[in-house]
Image 1 (spheres, rainbow, N blue to C red):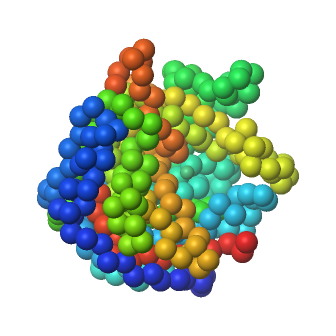
Image 2: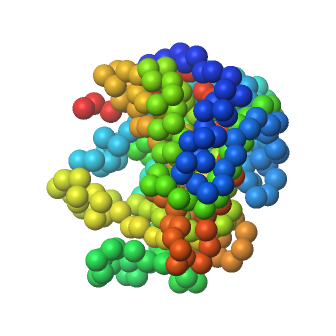
Length: 336
Ligand code: ZN
């Protein structure tokens, strides 16, 4: 196993009941209907979630591995990782564990750059793995040329996105991972319906935590279902031939889509970075995959926001289950 530099940062999160009290009014100020409570985690292996373990409890921690510096300005094709190596770097037990989150696909396995939805558990050893990780890639670049101003393509049977199971436990470039033993315990349950404010779901949560807890960092990981509505997602196409010219070049390179629910999202977020010099955390990273309905395999990518206006076909509806991380790990932070 490769040995990566690891920085560990201990957190002291408040009780989940207190977080529910903080998040409830924040969500209600940004959505027409919202709730926040503490429940026993439902079995996330069941539909609609389709996750690799039942719950989000036990050894709760977050890993930020690699980073965007491995993509920009010059893609670092040496940045190849194993989810199971990262699990061991963050001292997860071989007895049992569960990783979910958002990262970049194992380009060295898939033969193309892609979005990754890590979703993997193990029991009685790291070789005994249930790997439900998916990836999303561009399959028909000809349909996504930037011919129009907004660089968007709507979902259709000829969708240029393929979202399917990964054949590998590897990833590339970066990943933001919520790790636990996968046990069913108390979790935050958040619901939100019909967005009325300017913030997307995850930013609404992050901003509320930052405002209330100030310099006590709060980090959450978990999953949310976008039950109805439409989400704006991006999917990374294959690497450009050379370095990116600037940030605008990256934004023009990414392919954006408005894709319909239902979508299962895997999410890691922090209220802020308590030590940017050492940690350099990505503050939010959420990836989604389509479930149910038609063309689930043509829906997936990196979550930006919900598309929820009076003229849209359906208003957005979220149902989320989150737990707090008790410790952060920064693994193999790229050189600045
Ligand atoms: Zn992403």
